[in-house]
Image (cartoon, rainbow, N blue to C red):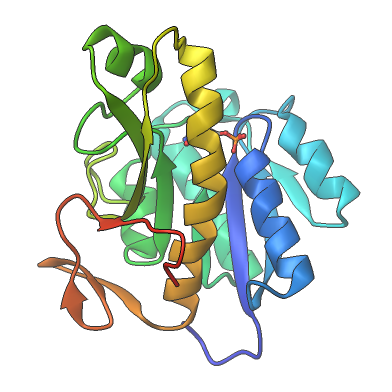
Length: 221
Ligand code: GRF
């Protein structure tokens, strides 16, 4: 983090942006001592772009289809973010696989949320996969981003039950409620200087975080 008065977040989205909205709200209410400096989407039709604009936040679309390689696209992201001066980059439903061109400059200040109990089910269709496997619970993980897809060190994880009759949609609805709770918690830890990434993994308050992340409980702060 820098020593500017208030930390600046950049949020990268591809779709509806409900997690993004949670950050916008938390910054506006003062629950999070930060401001959302920029929202970037790779998808010009992302509903979240409109939501961010309505909240008075600077938005920008960098359409991945305009770039001939993932690396060129990632470089464009880096340049945009560098011109905005951000302390923490929040991936919130950003549906692009990132290369080291993007990840390296932001290592340790780049978070993602993934709707599964990582290391289970990296990638897509997590809820259906949990149902197909006959799992009794599902969940969500906030993790540091590294070059391995959905493979960076977990920070915090919340669990929900899978109940009879669940579909991917009903399960997703249960999981996203937890997403909206745990993502700001992880960001707050970072902004408070409590959360770090080293070659050995993720640390909170100097203590190594377990490989499945810190288990979320209602009183977790
Ligand atoms: C969330 O389920 C998140 O975990 C996943 O993409 C979805 C984004 O939802 N990475 P939203 O755009 O934040 O509503």
